[in-house]
Length: 531
Image (cartoon, rainbow, N blue to C red; front, top):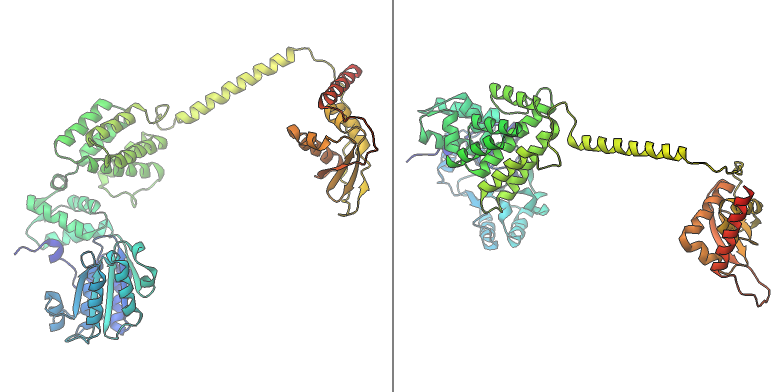
């Protein structure tokens, strides 16, 4: 029976695991020193080695003749665990066994000592799929585990695992495998198999695998079924992606704003069974590389591609502004979000291409490198127009006859020391303030006629025979204007308070608001006549 490459080439010892040295070295040392924990939690994206390291650890802790922390792979225990004949090591899929009864059965079984191994090892894959009651049942045995039990939990979604479980485990985070390591591993596999793999094809597979070794080996297996000589064209055809030439051609058409050529390429790729979702993702990846080439001087460590492709990316980046690249990336990202809800994905892609080629994403078309963006150009034009209008307005004002106005100079008042709170003293500047109001604010002066003021701390109390003074000060922000004038006089901000003045019995009616306004107007006329 044919064995898939990812199963055939699964690492057997810690040293064979790729790109996870920070984990494998720690586990190997723990086994060698006999300091293993009772529970481990392996987290990380798919295909990064979580299950592989779980099986290696299960063999290492039970191996009869361990070699520097690694299983010997020759003893009956290692062979039994490898072929599944030893029942002391149990691998459980929590996606299909996530009920509380499954965990209770596990808990009851764990109480028995192992039959042939040193430890009963329970590997629970996708542990985040357990139900709440199942987690509670698992927590019970993890709080006080038997000395012969070892739990290894694996998950791709650590945020779904309760903290009560996480806190009782040693947590190890598996990183995405480096593309260079994936490519190297694929070439190593090809040297020991009956097919050939070019370096360019290995790098392309590594890029498509997105950090997962299992995905890379599965794609390689699929390519080998298509041809025993695997090159980039075979990979592109097998994976259903556009070739690099087609991607560069489509990117060039968009950058040149050639909608016709861009739409032709999209249709050609679609007719050749290239998925629109995959094409959109590839365009995002391509312009992401262009963005990096546009932003940094040496993108070698950030962009995963062939040397000649890097030169073409840098050439494209030099011909476009940073804003334009951001616009294109945003357009394709929005398209990818809409594809899941779109009835016709091709139409959605074509609309995006047309927008990007006609500049409809923004009010104006983005210029080439070195030119200002249209947003800045529009803003500059508006500022210039405002400056022109302001200059014209000033010239018109200069041509108008100016009526001479006598201004009363106001001496700068030094800030007086604050009066202690609770002690009131007459405000000596009140008379001068009223005289100034007669010139600056006639209406306010009329309201405050015959008033006096006392000062206590930062409070100025105004006594006035005008019963409507308090309401009038609250109208149209008049009180704030008075507070500003008081601040100018006293040199610091004061709070104003209106105090009712004891009045003698009289039949006089308080002045109406109309009377006050008439007096204010008359006062204003009197001041203008004096000027």
